[in-house]
Amino acid sequence: MATHPVGKGTVNVAVNLLKSERNLLRHLALEEGRSLSTFMRRQVVAGLHKTNPAAAIEMEKARKQHHTEE
Image (cartoon, rainbow, N blue to C red; front, side):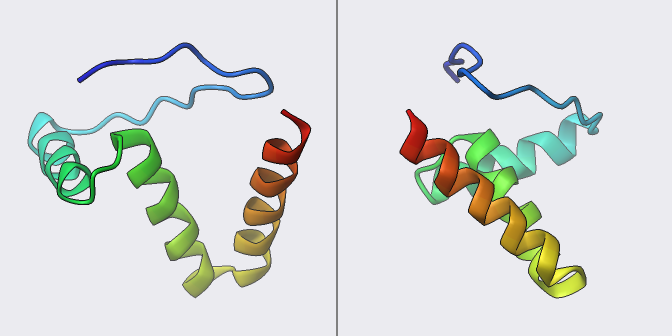
């Protein structure tokens, strides 16, 4: 799977996963035609909508703002 340089205004966050967990997530991402990082970011926001909706809204707002500033 190809990697891309870290974009301006972004950071990488390391999450230790079992190889089997990573492989499962990679498979699910590929089924959706997404990169692993995009898939995981979307899953985080989806989970936040259930556990902390205000935080999910903040993350979505931050991403929209980031894309308009590019």
